[in-house]
Length: 329
Ligand code: UDP
Image (cartoon, rainbow, N blue to C red; front, side, top):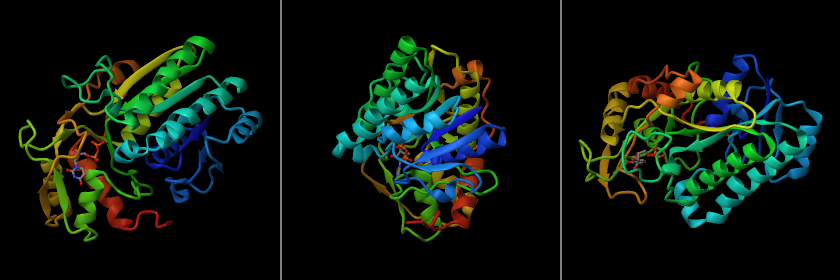
């Protein structure tokens, strides 16, 4: 399949690009490099530096390439920033997706896999979370992603778009061969922060809240390896049906607490990793764990990197070999 990947130089996007290429798909990357890294995309692959807001460029690209499908990752993804600058998120994540969908419609491209998130569920009443759980996001980031899901459903009904929204849980880990990995600036995610402490780049990790109603008082999350996310995207794009909108959670179904992750990282790295207890972070639900039944049964997906030691070990190999990440800014 010929696939345009928006945000293909970002963390999850770049791993999907690599995976799709390995499975014989012809991939073109479209990324504005605001948060993405040129070094995350292999040299031989077609790369276009462009912005989703650029309707003319998207129109030209669709006119001059015979794409079968689009994988749409390009978005801002800092929850805290979205609270302070909501319009930045509604513009890039929502309004620019209107532009993408409209240029797809005009060009007759009718398959799309969308990078959605468990943040669309907000604070779910019960876990594990199935796709039928009420989606009540609690921040502008989650709302901007949910609004795109609504648009996709409407476009499926109106002009035959086939779309699949993959609602990821906590993406982590790095490519099996160590060639690409996670590099956010600023970094806010737990596993990279812990590993930066292990590398001596930070003095300590602060545990955000130790008084949650969980086994050890810290938040529980479903950590999903980026290689497993990549295979879910490939299976989704290969199986999309015209005129249908579907959504799948992508997680392992296993939850791990913040303390557990720190302990595993101490074991894997062999380094002490100082941790301090801090206040709760606003908007953090106590437990977010996927029920992955649907992605297994409808897409035939299975996690192959679900073990938490495998996940943290994979992230550690990348961070140890690339202490400055891609070192491009
Ligand atoms: N967390 C933490 N200290 C940090 C960063 C994160 O205790 O410095 C916690 C956070 O409260 C959450 C979990 O680790 O419970 C995962 O957070 P992350 O930001 O990696 O992903 P999120 O769950 O917000 O998507």
